[in-house]
Image 1 (tube, rainbow, N blue to C red):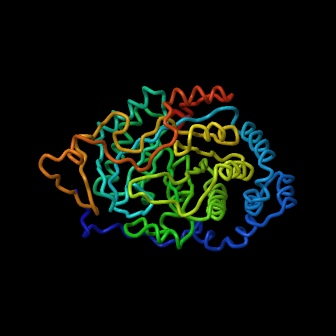
Image 2: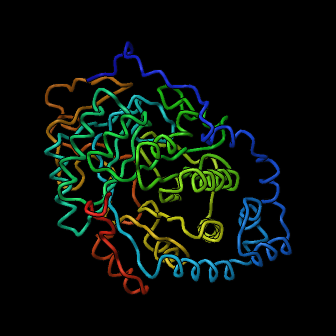
Image 3: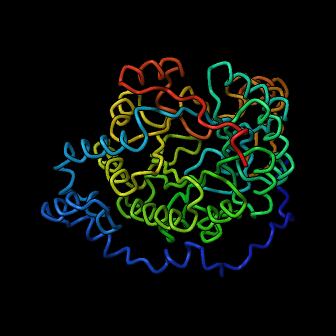
Length: 415
């Protein structure tokens, strides 16, 4: 179904809520904090390491070039703090893609509306089949992912998917287009317990350049999504920036400020932070900025020292070698065996795939096979780097001295 330009998106409410991070973010002196991250001295970093409780300014210093020279010390501190707060366990989850239909044009995303790709939205039965394939691999926590397209991925459809999966999965999180609290509340009542929303970039200028059309262009509406999710009753809130768009130090200072705000105002929920670096995808977008593996290791340590109780998430975007190296530094949650296309685990939906260009379905020439429905899987959001099966990742986690945790929550615990 092509996107109908006459569709009217729901009007967003004013950003007057005193709890909203928008006002606090606009008041941050990011220039001064970024300068600390670039020019802090070794003595400044040592001072941070001598304090039991760190500030946002301390975090900026811990991601500085001077702190990079103390990575071994940072790593030891981070590892010890993680084991103290989380024990020697690693929580496993798997993404389950429902749909790659999208009305947004985001230059860095494989699902971007104008990309000529194969798209599909799974039926509820197909979603359940995908879920059962993940159950057979051991997973009990899933992250439901979909592009933003109200005609395909409606509130009612999402509630039906959650209800079907909740009978067998105790942990269901969502990564979807931002919604009102009322819609989120229905999803919590159906069995969802977590919401993940990446701001993508906290740089307003880059954000406007990257999001050329669609409701995602509204920076503020997206920025205050975690608070609407908290009001709806989610017990886990996930945030992050897509590393590779803006300067990584400036972006992660913003993520840290956002996390501190949520911990103050949404204290009944656990906060998790994801650290995704841009990966190749349809559209062949190239990162605007560069972040090294060593930078990422330093960042993991800095987040752990600032936020001892926050979950740190690492996906299959990173290589097996790097993931194995980062796990002991402070990571608490990982995905494994991931697919980023709808139907990736079972082939579900293959017979309903359709080729779109600029939001419209393109008819296939008679006899053509490349784009013909039923012959090719739907297009993934991005390429994964760690292709190891879940059991192999779990085995490696045990070798590193950690216990894989497939289930950490049960609906019976909900009041």
